[in-house]
Image 1 (cartoon, rainbow, N blue to C red):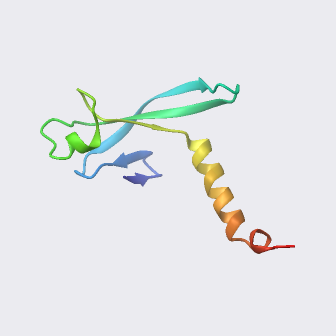
Image 2: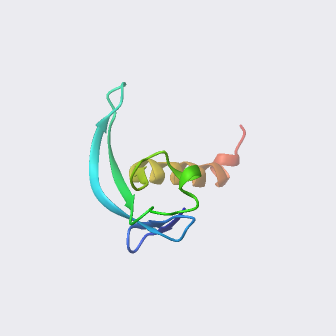
Amino acid sequence: MGYNEKADTYTCHAGKTLFPIFIKKQKSKSGYESEVTVYECEDCTGCPHKEKCTRAKGNKRLYISKSFLEKRQESYENILSEKGFYIG
C-alpha cells in the first residue's frame, strides 16, 4: 500500500483511499505502551481485491504504529551506516 505522508492516508491496490479514523492506545504483555493509528478504506463494495485483502465484512482497516515504523527506519539506517558495518 502506498502512503501519502502529507495527507496521512494510504492507497490500496484498487486505488481507494484509507483515511485515519481513530488512534488506539495498547499495552503489550511486557507492559510496553504504544499508539496505533487505525485507517479505514473509503469503500470496499464490489472491490475485486477484497477477498485477498481482508476478511472483514465491511471496509478494510489497517492498524499502523507510527513509532514502530520510525524505529524500524532508524534501525535500518544504523545497519547501513559505517558503524553498522564495523566488525571489531
